[in-house]
Image 1 (cartoon, rainbow, N blue to C red):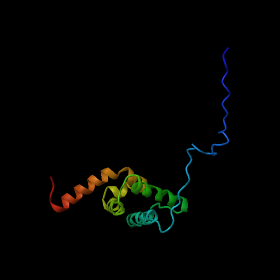
Image 2: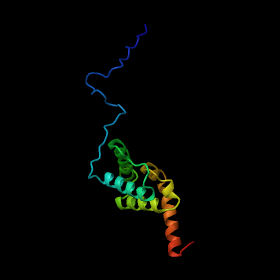
Image 3: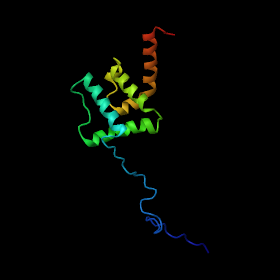
Length: 130
């Protein structure tokens, strides 16, 4: 005689906290004095120098989205604060990248390429082209 398995309940057992294992994470909020918000303001300021009518965050939701990218650059990618500031300045100074890096997400995506471009620009400026 075969035993039939008990039906699987779609609900977690009562001793399991509801939502455990859920993919939805708590949303982190960055305040005005946070490093990420300061980086967002620096990035926006540099973009405005290039184009006074550029699209920058005009709501707290958009600003938080920008902060999230800067948080990931520091926390996940391991970049130091001063390193991020330098790359913001370089990306908004460089004749090509200032037209292409128009958000912190793009800055993060193109980081490695920007590092190489920055090194090349420094070598050309010092006359040490290899």
